[in-house]
Length: 269
Image 1 (cartoon, rainbow, N blue to C red):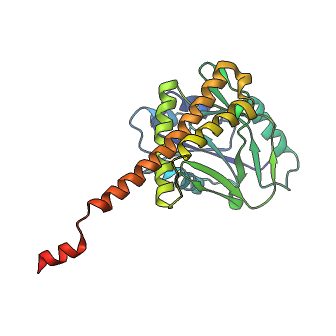
Image 2: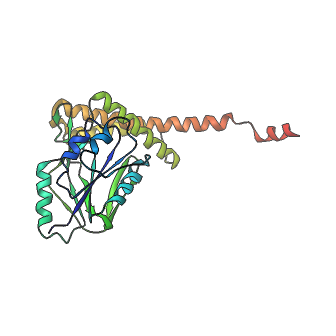
Image 3: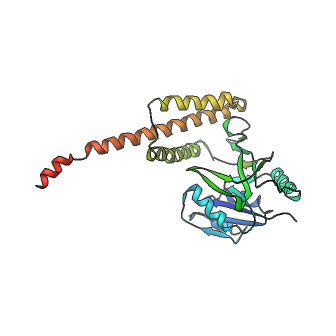
């Protein structure tokens, strides 16, 4: 008998996508959902697929993943996002691997393919976008810096060839909204950590991000879609450093506006 798998999904207001995600995971031995108090029909839809639906305040991607991992009862954990879908080909590949001898591995990684503006993206920074999502519960945990979490395991990892499908953004407005949110999180982290900032960061990083995605990783092969993806990535890089600069300016202005301590002391005498 193959070892059992617990599928773990994080949700928040994903009523339009969560059904597709959970339907693709019905082959798993256990299905667990951790919701961050959705205000739409997400929880109602989830309960059609499993009675293991829990709710917790948002702890960040790292904290939330480690929390849902703790609910898993089986030796293997499969992480999926609510806007993702397990492709039938990857499902079959996983089952084939688990039906054979795979004692040498504690984790499996596989590509993620994005559906964007009506077509699948096959090049650039978005593909293959390999993720380690299937691992032995006792050998791995989630680490990383928000909002970019990653699974770290102690042991050998094997790469599978078939993808999970990612329905990342509804439209360009949704893409811009996400870039705005993620860039704020990253800029705040860089500022708190005291990471160096120079004004050229706002110029050079976006430029090289575009070159990397559109030229070096052949995003141009996806045509206008590839151009849009590369330009948006460049814009996201600009936002990250521009917001870090803004935080530096606010910090300097705050200390500049503080009353002189010597004058304050004299005022109390």
